[in-house]
Length: 169
Ligand SMILES: [Ca+2]
Ligand SMILES: [Ca+2]
Image 1 (tube, rainbow, N blue to C red):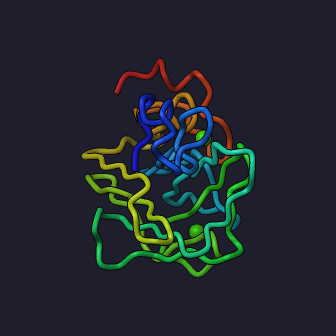
Image 2: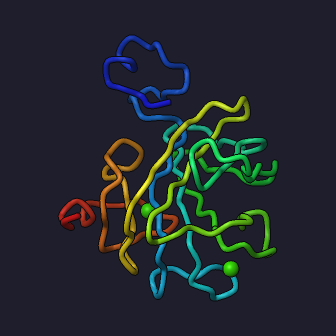
C-alpha cells in the first residue's frame, strides 16, 4: 500500500502516519555490497533498511519479506525484530543462520525485487531494479517518502540524508 498526500490528507489509509508517510517502508536497498556495510560477522552481504515513520516502535512479528512480488517463498519475520520509533532496522539477506535479522535468500544485483508484507498479507512496499551498482544503494530521500533512487553514499541503519539525492541514477 502506498500513501499519497491526498489519501493522507483525508485520512483514508490507516497504514499512513500523521505526516503522510507509510508507517513502515523499504527505505534503502543494497544488492551489490563489496565494502559499504558489514554485518555482525564482518561480511558484506546484501541488506535492506526499513524505516518506521511513526512515533512508536513497531514489532515485525508475522510481517514477511520476499525477493519477488507474489513470491511463493516469503520469509516470515519473528517477534523479536522491531523497528524503533522514527528509526531504522537493517535486515541482512545473506542466506545464513546468523540471527533473526538474517533471511534465507539473497538479492540479485542483475535484476531482482524485494517486497514487504503486513501480517495480513497485504503488500506494504516493493522495489524492483534491473542492475544494481556495486557499493551503491537505492535510497529514499527524504526517509520513508522519497522515491528509491540510486545513492552513492549508503547509510545502513541511519537516515539517508541529502547526499543521495544528488547522485544520478
Ligand atoms: Ca552474513
Ligand atoms: Ca539509510
